[in-house]
Amino acid sequence: MEVHESWIDRQIREAQERGEFDNLPGAGKPIKGLGGRQDPDWWAKGLIERERLPMPLPPALALRKEVEALPSVIVKERSEANARAIVEDLNARILDHRRRIDSGPPIFVRTVDVDATLEQWRRDRALRDDQRRAELEDLRRSRRGKS
Image (cartoon, rainbow, N blue to C red; front, side, top):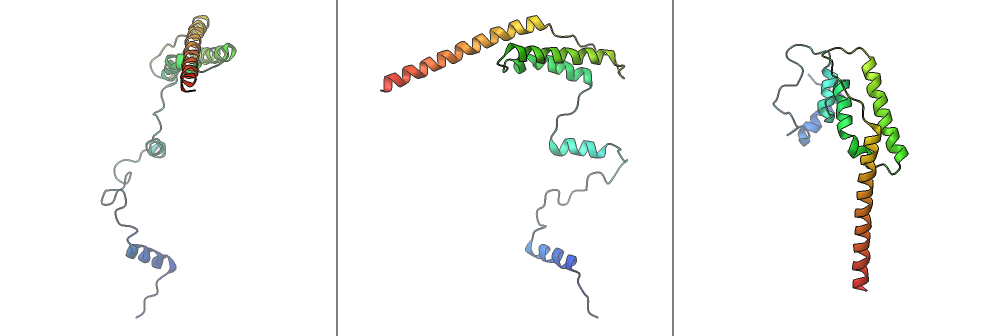
């Protein structure tokens, strides 16, 4: 009796003979998700793990994290108008969050003092500008000394 091999079966057999299935990651380990209870969010959890995405935070905690990171975000802005727009946008989102009914324990997020934040931004920008001027002056001096 003659056995006819399909094109797919032949491709698989030839790949096995070439060793293309040897030493694959996860070889000899159970396939994730086949045992236990079915999780309705399996795909989202798999995506987060596979893509190494940060875990999403509840909105109030995400806003608090933004408030904490605000100085390092706005210091990169070149104009005070852009820095002000970023702070005001954050405050608007905080106020919008306060108006919404949230499930879970209430987490209060304070708005950011725009004037105080911009004053700090001005000081940080001035310090950065002074450091850049000093670096440029050092570079000019070193170039003059080599000539």
